[in-house]
Amino acid sequence: MHAYETIVNFFKQGGFFLYPIALIWAIGIVIAIERFIYLTRVGTGNRRHWDELQPLFEAGNYKQAMNVVQASGTALAQVMKYGLSRIQSARRRDDIEKAMEESLVEVIPRLERRTHYLAALANIGMLMGLFGTVLGLINAFAAVATANPADKASLLSASISVAMNNTALGLLAAITLLLSHLYLETKTTNIVDSLEVASIKFLNTLTERQQRAAAAGAAAAAAAPVARSTGEVRGARA
Image 1 (cartoon, one colour):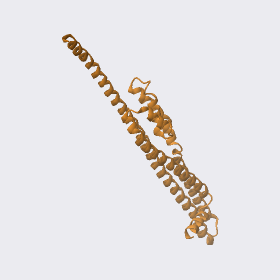
Image 2 (cartoon, rainbow, N blue to C red; image 1 turned 60 degrees about the vertical axis):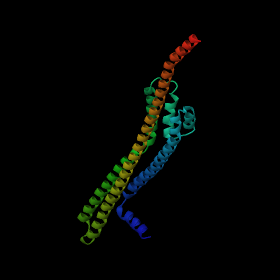
Image 3 (cartoon, helix red, strand yellow; image 1 turned 30 degrees about the vertical axis):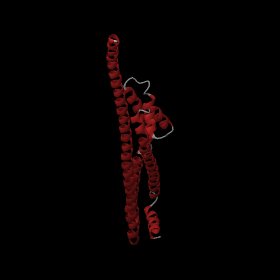
Image 4 (spheres, rainbow, N blue to C red; image 1 turned 90 degrees about the vertical axis):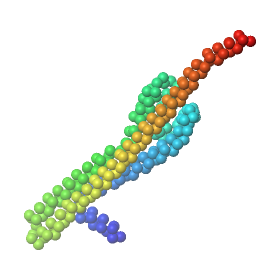
């Protein structure tokens, strides 16, 4: 109850500009919470999906991997879908890599959506707090200049309270939203990095399997003439 009364008195003594500052702060907090939930869900889904896909890639079971990514809506699934769809038609590793980079161009904006609003709202909240502070100081000097000597102290105190309350709330909103922006930007960067690492691991696994298959084919081709020659020699002896 004491905290509630403190907040009510804070707004009563702070003047009009406290309300738009509080509204900006509330909008920023809602955006930050929504982005945090979304990015946490994306990161968790990507990790779970990679644990499912990695054994399929190592086994060369790309058809089943394609079925898995088509049934999933994660960011990792979209990136892998682009790469898996190019395996049959691509002649080089670069072709598959470019296809996966194209998918990242589509995925990254969804991860970064609305996060940049937090920095803008933080600056607006701080500037509005500064504006409210300046108005409070103007009213304070005006009160001192025109009021009766007996009322000057109370009017000056009320005007300074308006100025300081606007400063306090503006700084609080700015600090909170800027910290949220920094945290969400870091979280987004980590998700993008994890997608790039997963893409590289997929490409490396694919390249290694292709190299082993080519080496096995070359060995089989080299062994075939030797086997035919041995058979011919045995046939001649017979």
